[in-house]
Image (cartoon, rainbow, N blue to C red):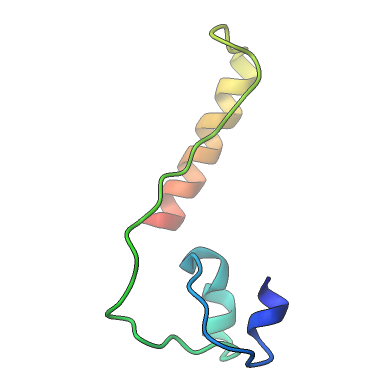
Length: 72
């Protein structure tokens, strides 16, 4: 999707986290910053039912910390 945004093909509304490097590099320009959308929830899903193995919990916790840092 990023490759469609950069050539100047229009306006998009996309999560800031994925676009920040392009904005910082000057490839994209933020317009209408006063009209941002509400944050969307992020879910981590696993296929282990109620008995989640320890290594899966550790990875989920790690991912949660990374996302929390990026989204704060």
